[in-house]
Length: 117
Image 1 (cartoon, rainbow, N blue to C red):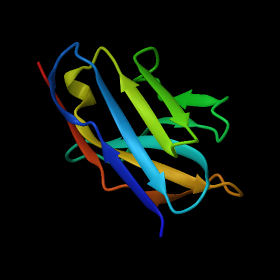
Image 2 (tube, rainbow, N blue to C red):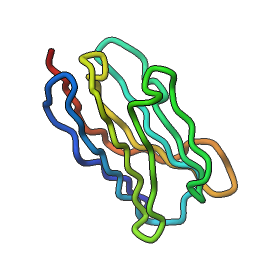
Image 3 (tube, one colour):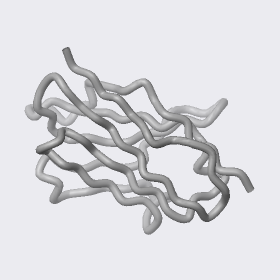
């Protein structure tokens, strides 16, 4: 059974840092990514990383502040978030694809990140 479990969210102040983790199990995954959804908005892409970890992608809104990484030995993907802003407040979701497809097929339950001003 495939499971993605996020952790590391919380309440922080503007300028603080957080590191989100996503522990994946049940199969070997291809591309993994992070998405977020703020109240009243659609889910949006934040960042993604290839299976090897050699290729990463970021939304313009987080470039230079967030860093995605993965540890395939632990089947875990991370999102280091620095210089957090109130507009980063959202539920953050981990997503994963199969090796043979770039489509995100598996999703975690989400972890809340709240940045106070």
